[in-house]
Length: 198
Image (cartoon, rainbow, N blue to C red; front, side):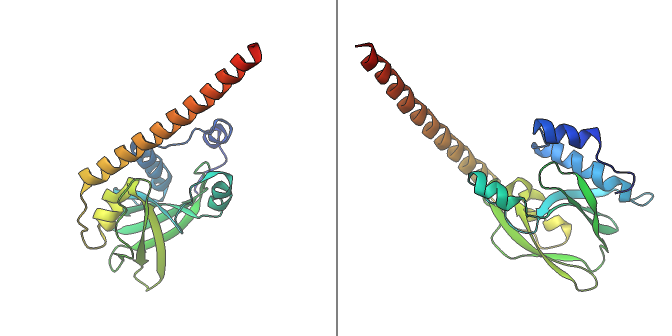
């Protein structure tokens, strides 16, 4: 990364565990990382976070497994397709790994689009020289990748309202489980205290 070092930004992220999570902030982070590689008068049209495999969910084993996942900040301009690798944990730039002419570059879906913000779907990227990469994206970027395929592939029809409704119901279900678990633990603790008092 031109002029990029382990700055206070990434030290702060590592210590506080505060990283960009909201989509608007992630997009801002992508633009900050990709901008030094842009040519004069070149600008980013759309961008997304891509992975070399789907991220795992579920505690410490998933965290250990995800540490091996390659994470890419990807952007498409009027001229080129750019991908910079970033570290999985603090999104520290590792360097530009792809700079292809947009002419002749394409994406095609390998799976159904991500139907939830927590789901992952795969696309195949084919560069102008014929090199092929399988890349994964989460439902957070379904507009950029699942719907428009980074403007390099066919339009995919997604019912965004249905996806958001499904995510809301899943979130409510998880909250309900946590509330019930907390109530059970609290009842057990209170029961133990009352028993010991007698």
